Amino acid sequence: MNLDQAKKVLRDHGYYVDRLFHEDDVKDLGFKFSGYESYNVLDKVFNNSGVDEVVWDTIRIVAREEEQR
Image (tube, rainbow, N blue to C red; front, side):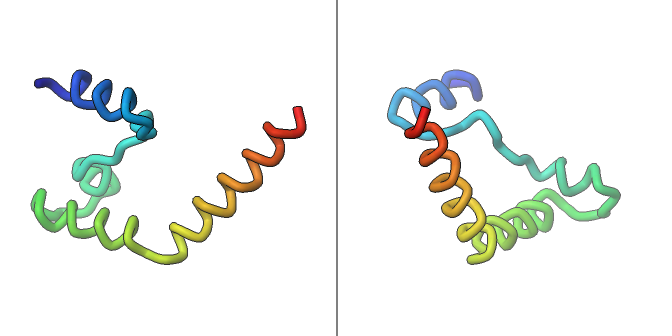
């Protein structure tokens, strides 16, 4: 299964997959990390409670706006 097929399977099951981050995104910022180190940076970012709070708050705001249309 390639990446597009995997994303389709997840999308078909209700997951949002249109915005994914890759370890190269960290490296592209100029950091000289290994793949493991870059992945660890992403893991810390996305497991940060502040990120969760912003995402959930924004989901609520946008959903309310859409609901009122």
